[in-house]
Length: 156
Image (cartoon, rainbow, N blue to C red; front, side, top):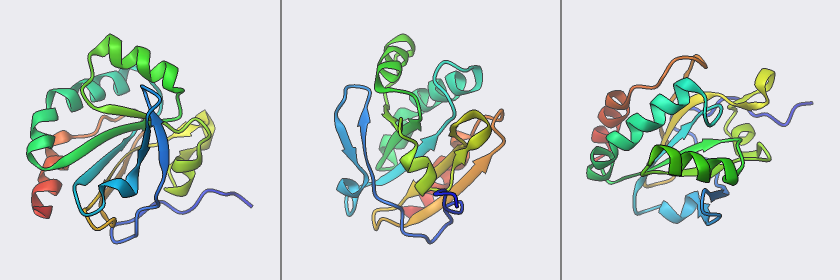
């Protein structure tokens, strides 16, 4: 019996979690409840070509996400050491969370067993702690920030 749940869907209560960011600081999803929408950008691996381009785009669009009253977190199964080196190398503005034990990707139904990592997916958790947007993509296809920002606009 697998501990991987079905993929998270719009309307679900977002599973809470606490993960360490690249600076080893705890980030607890429920701390944003009632305050901000949260964009969870799940991606497979630091340093890979599609993920690098995607995270650079998230940083380029960071002001737009801030303007939409949203907090953006990249989440992968890499260590916070890898995240720190990658953030510094790319000059990323958003925080990266380390799901090294694969607990969160499994809670969200986003575990990708063939590579022992998370799927490429975007989940927006609204201020009430509910999933307002969820999109899982092909592992080699980058997400579209415009689509994510449009979904955030509907929440304001």
